[in-house]
Amino acid sequence: MFDYKLLAALAEVVQQGSFERAAQSLSITQSAVSQRIKLLEQRIGRPLLIRSTPVQPTAEGRKLIQHARQVQLMESDLLGEFTQLTSDIYQTLYIAVNADSLATWLPSAFSELFQHNILIKLLVDDQEITHEYLKNGMVEACISTCEKTHQGCKSELLGSMEYVAVASPVFFEKYGHLPFRQIPTIEYDQNDNLANAFLKKHFGLEPGQYPAHKLPSVQAFMDAALSGIAYAIVPELQATPYLNSGEMVEMVPGKRLSIPLYWHYLRLETSILKQTTKIIHKKAQIYLKPN
Image (cartoon, rainbow, N blue to C red):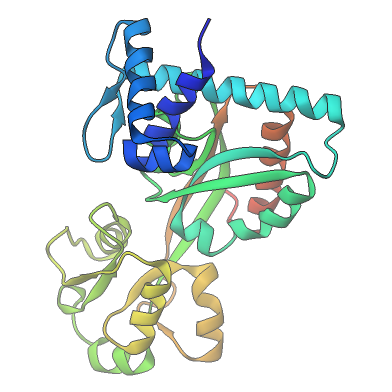
């Protein structure tokens, strides 16, 4: 039998990325966290963590975290049946999401999830990386561009997010006549491939063949484009109000980049996953382009 207090410490270290932050989250000392991890590793007989920055789980550690998450979900589900989910009983679901979904359509699901007493804890990262959070046992579900399903999980297509290149009218007037290899754009960080995908699809450009700012904030994309320092490749959902008001114009009218999004979740028959999956699909049908 596993000691789930030890498993909780393991999961929290990976979730927080360090022993110090895990200790703060669990309201215990860092030494106590270290002792719990050491004891668990002694019982398993293998290292469970890679002491890097941030801390990463080994393959064995990842399996234990996934197991702990699954048990937590099933226990929460069972408790909900006993208590009929009264107003003071909440279930928590960890979800990894891409920043663009969080900035556009995903918040429309929050109030409906809360009506079912579901609390959500979000990890935000690039849409090509969120998949790894599920693999590492850090979340129970994720929104990702990856179609491939991890062992013990399900994958379902949500639809596609449409991206468009926009800029302020002043910027477009100054730079719009130039080839795109000479026009500054914006990238989120080193993991952001959207600009490259858009420029490669429509203009055959590769990374490093165009100037780009690095601004790790979705809102900063819009602010930078509005201020006239670059054009931004953003979700059409986000750009539409600015295009309608005339605050922005399309750099290349009619050209889009379509990115499919998938909903991945643990293969467990629990009410919280069933209800969340139902609500996520419902909202995706409203806001995303069907494939």
